[in-house]
Image (cartoon, rainbow, N blue to C red):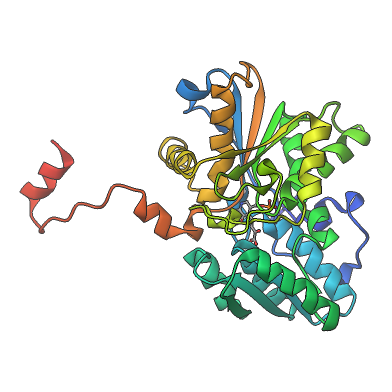
Length: 356
Ligand code: AN7
C-alpha cells in the first residue's frame, strides 16, 4: 500500500508554476499556502434569495490571511536575488505574513504599523515570528510613504503589494475559484483597502480566460468602508476611520488597478458602513460557522447591498472572498457579541440560564 497520498498540496508556487514568474527551485520559501476552501453558503437565502453564494475562505492560509499567496513569491524572489531583509507598512496582515515568511527564509523583517490601529492577533504574529515591529504614530499611508523612501536608500526589499510579485502570487486565488467551480462566477466580491487584491484577482481571471481555462469573466465588486472610501469618493482620505482596521487606508497604492478591474469587468467600487460590516460579520459567523475578520465581511455586506439594490439575480453565482480569519481580531468579536453569563457552580442557576 502507498503510505503517502499522491497530490498533497505543494503551495501556490509549485502548483501554479506555469502561470507565475520563473523562480529557482532552491529559492522557494513556502508554508504551503493556497488551496483554501470555496464554501457553499445556504443560510442567507432570506436575504440574498436564490443566488448561489460561495465563500472563498482565505483565513485558512498559514498565517490566517490571503497575504500569504503574495508573500511566498515576494520573499522567494527576494531570497533568489540574495536579499537579506524585507520591509512593509501594514494594517496588520501583511506584517504577520512578511514576518512568518522571512522567518522561514532566514531573513530579517521590518514592519511598520500604525500605532493603535492593528488588531491584536496580527501584532502578536509579527512579534512572535521575530520581526522588528515599528509602531508609527501616524497612518498606514504615512508608514507606506516612508517604506518607499527607505527601500530606495537601504538594502531591504519592499514586500507591500507595490512589489509586483505580491500581485502575481495573489492572482492564484482566482485560478482556484475557476478550478473549483469549473467556470468563472457571475460576480466576485472583495473588500478593498490598498486595492492589491482586487487587482490581483482581475489579473488572474483574465489570464485563465486568455488561456482558455474559462470562457467568461466575473464582474469585480470591490467594497471599501464608508469612513475609508477614497476610490468611491475619487480623492484620498486624510484621516480614514473604520472598525475594519485592515482596510483603514486613505490613499491606496493600487488605486488604478481597482478602477481598471471595475471598468473592464463592468463591476463596481462601492462602500458599506461599519454597521453593515459588523452585521455581515456576525451573520456569517452565526449562520455559516465561518469566523472572518471585520474587513473580510465587507464583501458579504457588499453582496447584501447589491441584492437590496436589485443588482443580483436569482441563479447568479457569487463568490465573496473572506480575506482574513476572525481570530486575528478577538477584541471586535467580543465587543460585538452577547456577553457570557456568569453563574455560581450551581445546577439551578445554570439550567435557568439554559432556559429549560
Ligand atoms: C483582512 O495588511 O493592507 O485591497 O497592510 O488585511 O489588497 O489591500 C491589508 C489589507 C482586505 C484589503 N482584508 O486588501 C495590510 C493590508 C483584509 C486585509 C484587505 C486587507 P487590499
